[in-house]
Figure: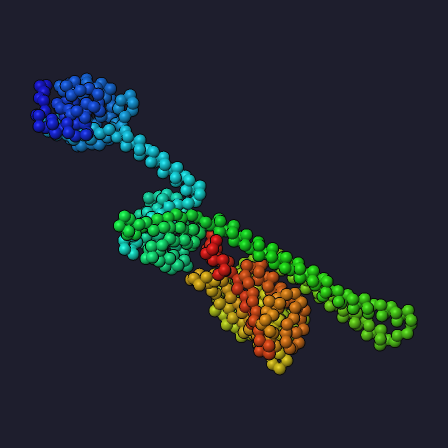
Length: 512
């Protein structure tokens, strides 16, 4: 086939291009080639012109280029692909553009670009691995003025949220919906403040994955400022802190239990040194007196009966002290199965205990239940209420019948929307006590009643505190002499969602 050289103006234009250009006839004869093509492929333009591509460059025969040229000749459509060529394994981007009399082939050396891309890909893979090991992801929230406009996540951030990379397009609105409902307002307010004030952000909150799993995360962010001093984004990190939070919570609980055990151990030492020693001393005196009368054979029947009764009374007191101590110690280990309960059913069970025991007539109960049904340890909660009611009866005012107002409500300790705690209060109209000594009222065998019978052993409220602390809660008291006393209990309720955990008390929330 006769060949014609490419006209000079077109040849000059082609030589100005950085990409290699080959003009081929239908049978792959080279009709034109620019200097860049010669540089990329090796032979000079003169060595290429008038020859088929396969005779000039036999190593290309059987390559993908040959197959794509055949396809373009037969089907007439353009194609783009990558080609590895030469002993040094250079990478080319190839585009074929069919025309009426043949084809134009565009070649671009992408060896360096491919190497850079591979290095970036390896770096990103290494970064993703490091982020996965550390549980640390990255994020960027684009901002215009004070509005969030777009959001981008790293691979680990997707994983933390339980979403497959690239499965959905992440937008600020969608990310907000993944925040736990009880934490959304706090996160929204903090994020808006960080954007408006151009300040750093440091947040701990919960997220809910698409499968319902609840995780705790720690988010840090810094404002991104452009050359004009305008804030363009918040950029930062997110770490899955679920296990860390659980470990810290367990450590705090263990520390609190250890402190409680040390306090109780000291109280038991005090009881052994004083409360038990006094009746034992009295028992010894009575026994010595009885023995003396027997040895002297000079006491009458009435005196013998009196001494025996006093010995029996003192022995009974010692036995009650031992029983109370056993119940007090056992309260730190006893627990029952969780069940759905209400304050009303717990009060009924507690009153039944009082009726079946040696306690006086139960008081009149006024119930203010705003908590509704909840999950709890029925047996321990019954014990708590029974001791609270018995305490109100034992500290009754001599001039009026005992009345106890029992109130229950759910609340959030951090002021949020999660009502995962129960507040239970018992307010009576008994003889009351001086609120300056409110802490002492929960010590074993402590009685602060100002008036009235106060006939109990003083162990009931100590048992209440021990059980409440075992449940992870706290107890407090306030009173007024001659008016009455109020005992208030706050305890966390078991979570309603698998994997969920309740917020900490106000003094620890958001600090761990």
